[in-house]
Structures are given as structure tokens and as C-alpha cells.
Length: 246
Image (tube, rainbow, N blue to C red):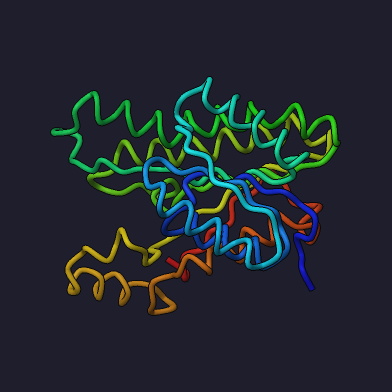
């Protein structure tokens, strides 16, 4: 059974890692997928081609989610092309790790802008159409770090904790219009980003996780399918940790 048949999803930062996993799994479940990417046109075209093999419509948009005007224009373009936006997945994010003593103001501002402001920008861009159709599911990607902090990631943790407060507020404001707003907090997910870490470090992390493995993008994507589908129609304002019990 395809849980997202005839729904249209907009996913930010989808050409690699978790975002790519979400796009692939959504397409398998019958969703039409509009996605954003920052630089790699080749990766975007490859993903478009891959997603359409599932018999859905897919289109990539080069767009900077951290830019307010760009986000509004993106939503307009997606609506024109797809007709509706039923699901928004705010996944785009970056890290600029350093101890607080050494974080520059620029590195603090950039992480807040890309990770947190982008969530405001895109949520603001999709709520009008969602209110009109009286339905919508917004899924925001936080992190285990947003829940418990992490040394050397004060900027990242602040941005990811901010997403949780923002999402709960949106859930309260838009619940009467049947728009749901939930958060996923991934733990240690093994992607291209973590592939560069020393094997010993990765092994230590895996050993510290109750389920004794890192997560996969698909683990996160499956949780997203649940929150995007009608299976979770009575769930809003929640944060779901997908972290192997960390």
C-alpha cells in the first residue's frame, strides 16, 4: 500500500544524506516530490530521474532556503508546477562546529540562518496554500543535539532546539486548520558526512548506542512517511527521536 499516493511533498536539501533518503522513500510511497538543492545540478538531475522511475512527478529547484524571498518564490513555483503542497520537510542544514571560545560571530549567524531561519521562511511560504486546502503536514528536522546539547556545537544545538519551539508554536496556531507540525530528532545517522570520520570514532559512537548501530537515511525517511501520511492524522506538536535509544 502506498501511504502518500497523490500527495505532493516539498523537501529541502535533498540531493544527499537524509534528504535524499526521504525523497526516495516518499516517491516509493507514491508522493510527487519537489526538492531543493544548493549547488550540484548533476546530483539534482540524477535524483529527478531516479524518482520518476517510481511513476511520480519529481523536480529539483536550486534555491537557498535561508533567503526569505527565494523561499516564497520557491513555494509559488512548486504550486504552479504541482498544484498543491501537502507535505513540507524542512531538512536543509549545515554545521560549523567549534568550542564557544572559538566560534566566530559569522559562524554562529550562518548556522542559525541556514538551519533555523530557513524553517521559518519555508513554513511561512506554504501555510497559505495549506490553510486554503485545510490540510497539511509540516515535518522539521531537528537533532538529538537539539534535545541534549553537544560540546563544540553550541550554534548547531541552538538552531536545532529553536526548531522544536517553533514547530510546537506552529502546531498550536494551525491545528484548527488541520495543519500538523511535528519534529524528527535524528541521532547518529551514517551518511556521506560521517563517512569522512575516523573509523575508531564511528565505532565508539556505535558502541554507545543501545541498538549498537548507526542509523540510515531510510530509518529517518520511514518516520517521515508516518508523520506525512494520514496514519498520524491525530499527531501534532510532537518530537520523535529516531536515534537507536541514545
